[in-house]
Length: 273
Figure 1 (tube, rainbow, N blue to C red):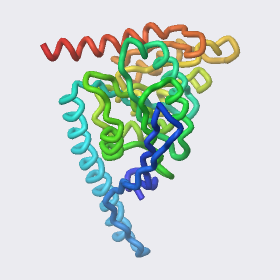
Figure 2 (tube, one colour; figure 1 turned 90 degrees about the horizontal axis):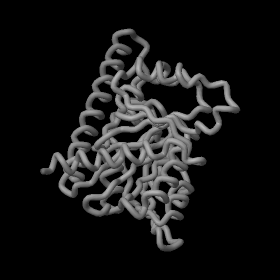
Figure 3 (cartoon, rainbow, N blue to C red; figure 1 turned 180 degrees about the horizontal axis):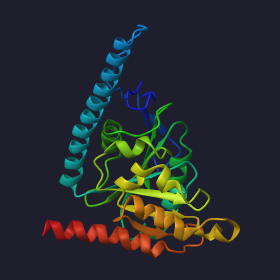
């Protein structure tokens, strides 16, 4: 059990071949280092010791993850791969946005995808329909991807040099924000079907992200959602946050998203000169 959030860590990787119906399940399981304490304490001093131990384990776990993330970052840099970590609550539209992006930019940019979900390969199969190279990570009862999972998956995925690798994280606005995966940038997708106060309720998620995508803007006419208030809350949490409003269904605002991707590629190229 993960000491940071209490979730399990029984993750496994499914290799999805975009050219066939075959799937291969990796038997390499990722495990955290754990300290299982089955003793029950009734005294306050023991309770305080347990709290200190929990904080230490959380610190050690995140420190280990950050070290692995730096290894991932070096692996990406050596191959000039632009890795992006896409995060949101369940149902915000990450997969739909990815599908539209892959279909619109597939002829221009080489993109591969790591899909993260607790169970099933449904999203990876949707991505495969676009012709994109994809790997599915199932986290079991785990609520986030971590650097070790990405390390295992990206070596199976083997993204092409000078390409883009999109990581669709498990739907959750809490723990995914805590775990560095080695990505170049974090992106949060928030939909108009959620409350406009999400940035205030989950500030760390919006604070660590470079870009916020407000999705499903085509539904605004049917909803009581105050866009200006939402953007005000987001910038209150993160004044430097870039914000785009898009609909993956109608295509509204997608050129801004595509332009943002192209600008990151251009920045990388300039840094290499």
